[in-house]
Image 1 (cartoon, rainbow, N blue to C red):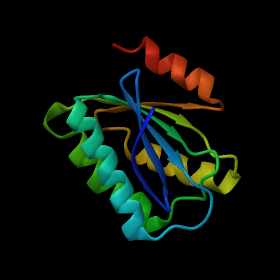
Image 2 (image 1 turned 45 degrees about the vertical axis):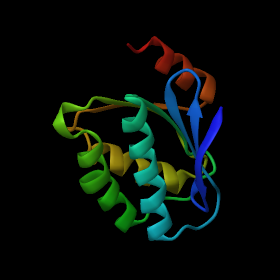
Image 3 (image 1 turned 90 degrees about the vertical axis):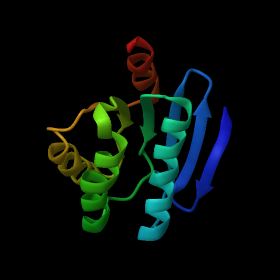
Length: 133
């Protein structure tokens, strides 16, 4: 795997199997760094014409209200614009409150062209991604 981008929010890797590996760090994050991290994720996907990502959120703190709003209304709209299909395998956070905020984000994106599945572990998430076209 090749490191594509890194900041206090996490690491973004180019996986040789043709997907973005998004690894969130533990600890607090500022909104500007969060936006930069996901903007680079969008750019990586489009640069390679990839439609898959694995978001490892196991260590992540809950999304803030501002992050949830931006993720669902800005980032996802831009990333799935023009009918661009996007598939996300999400390894869920260990923190129960973080799981709840993740569920709120996922409920808000139900009507988008973003197809996602939630997983407890990385192996199942990777297997699901490999089975996609």
